[in-house]
Length: 445
Ligand SMILES: Cc1ncc(COP(=O)(O)O)c(C=O)c1O
Image 1 (tube, protein in one colour):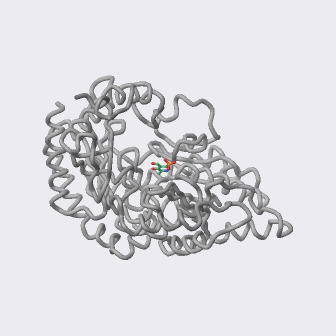
Image 2 (image 1 turned 45 degrees about the vertical axis):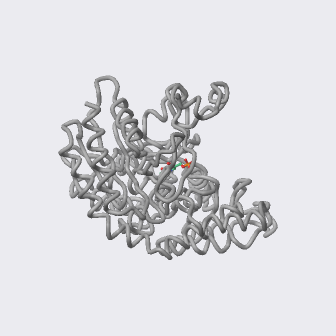
Image 3 (image 1 turned 30 degrees about the vertical axis):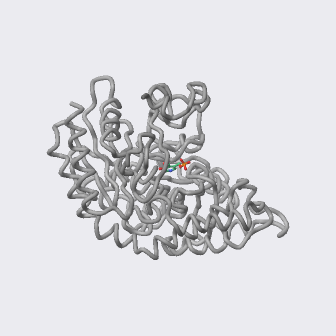
């Protein structure tokens, strides 16, 4: 029986949903419908167990249906299902803000809540501009992103983002310029951070020369690019960006929507790489993906600037926010999720297992000559696949579909396959994931 027939969905119902970042036409011919999730596995319409090789969308490091989160959410719905985000508060947002600061590098201790990673990025960029205006430097409005960066789907996010396919359709964005990416020729198959490539940060000096620091609000980078296929910063690169930003009075924003709260085997990418930004955007893992939420961490001086220049205290210091900022159910999920990460010692676990994870993933080099590069850090890996002429995204799609048939969910994007298994993944599960992927790659020749 076809999956459409099995799903009880009509073609009209399938057509009614314009799916996000999906090949709608291909999907709707033979839908991959997920019916349940528990622990590290999904169940599909055929009742098959499917290993979650990307922790949802880099969201569910704790796995699925975590009792502590389920209970916290159920309790919260019964007690306070919604509370107005503007001018009134509920206790859990303050508790969660404090909890998040425990995961942040020292000094990033003021938390603004959003509903997603894209909203977190929008918040960071708006506040960066407003900060300079509050300081009497209102000409500082331009942004510097980086090639291959991903910063979400809003107009601001695609403007600073550097994945061409995400930009070309959408016309004019914010005034943004881009650093080169750090996936340098000669560093293929590096485990962890490459020794060469730090000097690519110096391109920021060229952009500053072109535009002048008096016109630049902030530099935004993912400390480790996730969506472009796990691009790990070269040694010393982020330090150099930090140095240049400091010298030129430019804010440094780390977009840690993927890297915060454990994925790197550290509390954040900032901790893993030893560099503290002025602003950090987060989302995804903060609630283990159970309820949408984002959180932006600011250094205190930024918050203080708004408070000092806020006018009479009944006025808003920053007219910015979302109906779902600090949603009580998201806050309950966040408290439970971060509590479980700590209680289960998962950051240490990922850190301890990351070298073995890297060794396993790098075995794929031998799988086939079409594997042209492998990168890894923490519990994340990106595998580059030689493109078919004129169709660079086709082979990764075919590989991911072959994996789905074998009972593994992995992400494909551009010419890469991306892996990010749950923090609780056992060595035997890593082996079977990598073996299956090796077979799927061979199969796709
Ligand atoms: C680094 C980064 N920033 C921003 C986003 C956007 O997050 P969202 O899809 O929750 O809006 C993502 C999503 O993958 C991301 O990886």
